Image 1 (cartoon, rainbow, N blue to C red):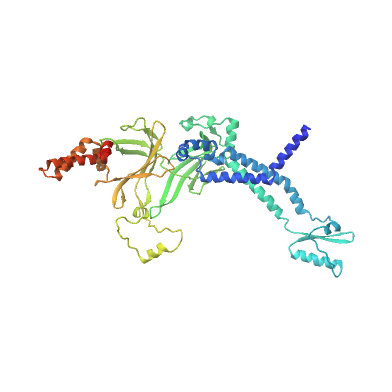
Image 2 (tube, rainbow, N blue to C red):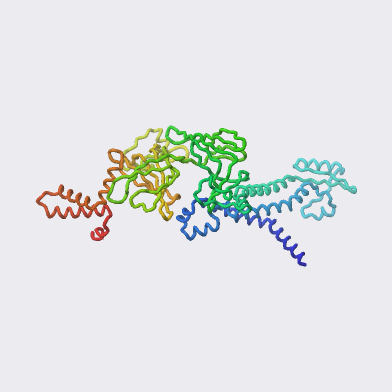
Length: 529
């Protein structure tokens, strides 16, 4: 009895898994998960999600695997069950469908035909052979295949069409199975399998690649992976980095990638039109060198590994910068030196254990400088345009924008992070040359607290020497009470004659309070006012 009960339970389980309602339910859940993976940014640093959702929900979403949906264990489990469900469905139904497609259903009696709901009977004039030929010609013209059976002095014509539609049903189901298997192979399942079976674990230290042990490395025979490798010009790499929730795995490649030159070509407007990498692939077994060019959406494939150009940034330029204090009564600058991609302690007043991380350097930045982002000029200067320009602006494609485009290269920029002892960081993006903004030359200094946020820029006026020295001296002077008092006294002295001593004192006191308020150094002054 227990054996029959167990067989019955297994049979019911197979029936459930291979049923259409089970497969449809899995497809619905898979669709919802895919929508989440499309809407929610994947594989971002965890602090970004904390800033976006807060610590409580960020931790819940991480436990559910929503930050890496397509590699989450439950997503892969759904794919496995979906493959099993559709495969069982095809295994159960395909033989019946193929047999039905081949069968002519000609083993039927006259009484069974009369029992059909849809039937018609009539008497045909002429001989049975003539009627058979007429009916055969009719079904053939209607697109049916037919056979004629003679049995016990009776003639049966059996016709059918649409037998190939059975293959469409089978092919559609097999296509879903192939897609799901591809999704499993393209996910982290092979990597997870190696971690479970061979004890591979992510590394979360800052050790160099050569110092990382085999416990954190995947062999070159790994069937599928998706990683990245930064290659500076003139150097080569033979490994790729595979990001994991708790660190990174090192993927050994069957070859080395050497970057000879990174090429950027521009249109006459200053917009880039080509990003290309001239590389040399060096086979680690034979030493053969294969030159190739990799462009955006034009990968190079060798030994089953496709090399894409996904992004670019500075490969290690030596930076020599001048920093200015933004607090205190000193305008004295100090040097900050480093290499793009590295970090160093910040040697600045008040920098208690802070470090500076040099992220990127761009020699060319092309921006649209048309009338303050396309808005009307605040100075009211009329912009004349020809009749052709007026028609081109208002007619043509509905996808066009009527905002003017004035593309200009506004010069180099440097991007870096200031990270405190608590691990929190703010990111900065500073342009090295002054930019014309509404007729004024200003330096742009951007800051953001999260990589998901846009940079918020402060505009620092440029002086006659195209530097920020004058503005920095003004800022430092406003921080110094003695300088503010001296400026108030000079203002009062030049504003009133000497015989108005009492009025001059009151004017000096008012000017001193205004400067203090402007410097935001004494809240009591604001409350008293």
